[in-house]
Each structure stands twice: as C-alpha cells, then as structure tokens.
Amino acid sequence: MTGLQQLIRVLGETGCRPCGMFKTSRTVKCPGEGPRDASIVLLGEGLGADEDALGRPFMGRAGQLLNRCIYSATLLRADLYLTNSVRCRPINALGSNRPPTHKEIGYCNGFLQDELDHLSNKRVIVAMGASATAALLRSAAPTGGVLENQGKVLWSERYGCWVILSIHPALALRRPADAEWLVDDLVLAARIAREGAPPVPKVAEVLVVRTWEAACAARDRLLGAARLAWDWESTGVHLTRDIGVCVAFCMEPGKATVFPRYEGGLAPIWSRAELRALDQEILIPLLTSDVPKVGQNAEFDNAITKTTLGVAVRNIAGDTQVAHYLVKNHLGERAHGLKRLAVRYTAYGRYDDPLDAWLMEHGYTKDGKPDGVFMYKAPGATLWPYNGTDAVVTFEVEPVILEMIDAAGLRGAYAERLRFGANQGEMDRYGVRLDRPRLDTLAEDMGEAMAAMASQLEQLAGHPVNPNAH
Ligand code: URA
Image (tube, rainbow, N blue to C red; front, side):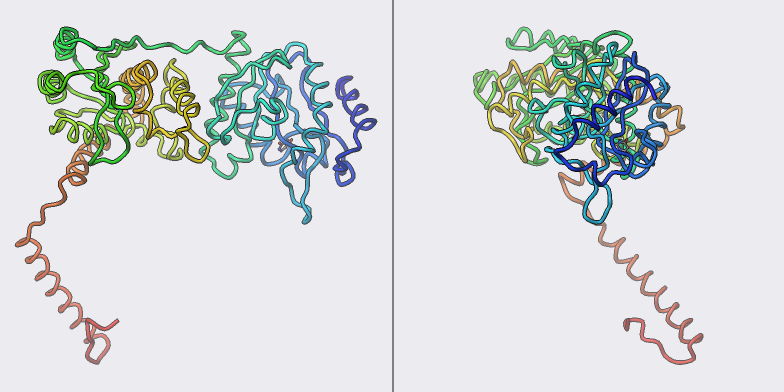
C-alpha cells in the first residue's frame, strides 16, 4: 500500500462516522489507486461487491468495461489514478448495489478532496456519472442528465484542473453502444493532459447577407460550387407547416453564407417585395440548381424548402445523418445528430451552447432542457452563426463519414438509402398514388393462390377446409 493510500485509509478510519455505510461494507474504505503523479484521474461512484471484497476500485464488471475503454483510448490503466466519490459500498435493503445519496457523497467529500489535493500533477479529472459530477462540482454541477452533459469540459478552481463530464461504465454495461462516449472522453482527457488545456473550438466564418447586392454576389459565388451543404432554421418541427427563418450554405471548409428571411421572433428584415425577390431570385435558383447538395437529415430541410419556397431541392447527393447511421448503427439514436457529429469529427465542439444558453435564459425549455423548437425566436446574433456552423459542420463531416462508408464497403447501400429517403420525402408530402388495376390483378392472383392452398390442405386433412375460418 502506498503512503497516499495509507493516509486515506487512516483518514477514513479515524474521521468517518456520520453516514454509517462503513458498518455494512466489508473492506471499510477503499482508497483510490494509481501513481501519485498521474495527470489523469478517473472518478467513479462507489464500490460494488468486488471492490468491497478486494479493497481496490473498479475490479468488477464495470471495471472490466472501463479497462477496455481505457485500452481503446490507447491509455494504460497503470498510468491513471482511479478513485470513487464514496469509499464504501452503498447497498439497499436487499443487499444490492445502489447509488450513494447526496448526503453520503457529502460526508465522503473531505476524503476525496484530501486525496485529490495529494495528486500534485493532475491536469484533468474524468467525472464518470452523476455521483462523480456531484462530488466534484457540488452546487456548480450543471443541470441536465448525464448523457446531455457528456463531453462538457469545465475548469475547477477548487482542484486547479479541468473536469470532463462523462458517463459511468456501468451505464455502458446496460447500453453497450454508449461505451463510445467514455472512450471519446478518455481520448479528450489524454489530449488535455498532453496540451494542458482543452482544444479551443474553431469558430466558423459566417457571412450574413443583409443587402440585395450581397445576396446576388453570394448567389453567383455559391452557384459555382462543386458541392453545397445547406441547412434551414425554421419555425418548428412540423414537416408540412414550418417556414424557413434563415438558410445557410457552405461550399468550402470553415465558411458559410447565411440568408436570413426574418430577424429573431419573425421580425421583418426585408420589405414584402424584397423577401419575394430573395426567395424567387436567390434562394430558389440556388436550391434548384444542378450543384450537388448535402444536408443533415436532408429530407427535413427539403420539406422546409417546399413549405417556404414551394419547390423541392434538386440533386440531393448526400445526407450526413443517413450516412452516419449506416456506418454507426450500433450507436443509439442520439449519436447521429449534427451536434454529436460536430464534437466527434470536427473542431467546432459544442457550438450550440450559446443558442442553448439563450433558450434556457428566456424560458424556452422542455423537461428542464433547451427546447430547440423556439430557436427562431433567438436574435440573429445568436441564430445566424449557429445556422452557418450547421452548414459548415455538415460540409466538413461528409467526407469523414464517406471514408468510413467506403472502408465498410457500404457505398451501394448508402446510394440505396439516399434514393429511399427522397421517395419517402415525396410520400410524406404528397401521399402515395395507388395503382388500382395493378392492385386488382394482385388481389385476383392472391385469391387463386389461396384457393389452391386450401385444396392442398383439404387433400392433406382429408376433409373440407374453410380458408376464411381461423
Ligand atoms: N463502480 C464505481 O463507481 N466504482 C468502482 O470502483 C466500481 C464500480
């Protein structure tokens, strides 16, 4: 046992009375383990049965999964310091594991603080799960669920290092695909340990078109693009009713052009005649041009194009959401959203944070979380850079995902999916045209086949069979 571990054990055994958990734990007070000069600290919740029996953190199933994540992030467990928010095993009345209460976390916090203060070289702590976040950040812990906060990086004055909010490996035991988030966070931790700080998010260069001359110049430039990413912000999420508030295009990495149709809250920017001209002479020619277009959930933006401009987008050649789903379909639904793709594959990070903060501040929330349906109310200074970055991220992630598609040999399947998406979009909007004569023929064929089957059954059964009886 190292000096540090001895210290913690002594501290624990002398000072630890109030929560009473030590009475039910076998190995009272499991200290953290790892080198004292570790630059990365992993903070868990509390002990399970294995840890309690062995007196070492992360030795059970969650620990094994954590080991695999550490390995996937090309780190070595021996280089990391692993510890827990509480030092005993919280159990329920049936003797099974349970999360520690806030009180228990509070009682144990002095030991955790002492332990962390002894780690003189720590640069980043990965808070794995809600208990770890509560133990480290106390009242400063952000609102929202673990998955929502996963990947956030905060500076801790108290500990003088960075804190990454991540998921607990036990969550990934239940939802194996979520292990990817933990791996991502460990990779980020390694980067912070190396560079001393989290990467500064890149900011896209966003040109906002506010004059007729600028609109014409931007249209002419964009019509010369080899490929265009496009993205609408609209008044909601109803495919057949929403109106586009602003639309962004990207034809080269890092730069976007945003055409606002309205200011925040649908305040007019243009006169009615100007808005009509913008739609007819700028936006329709761009969206119906031959230039290949790529969207994120392109059929949604196609639907907004139709409700706003009355035309369908021509030559949709890519859809980053469809593509990502195809190569990463083992991940949950949340993994394919643009914000996720941005964090994972680009340098723009959580560029939606300012918009989310605005929504929260102005009470546009649902279940305590920012409600994106109301983003059209945000002022242009918040909404337009967001819209532009959406287009830039779509443009930049497409080649990354296409490379994965090619590596997996899924180009053909992707082309099929894109075609299917376009058809489905048409069906959503216009319904389905039924071929009545063909259906009649099919019904007749099926009737004949059923009659033949019934007579075969009669032969087998040796008595009459009523094909309509169940
Ligand atoms: N879960 C934790 O949070 N910590 C451990 O040490 C083991 C499982």
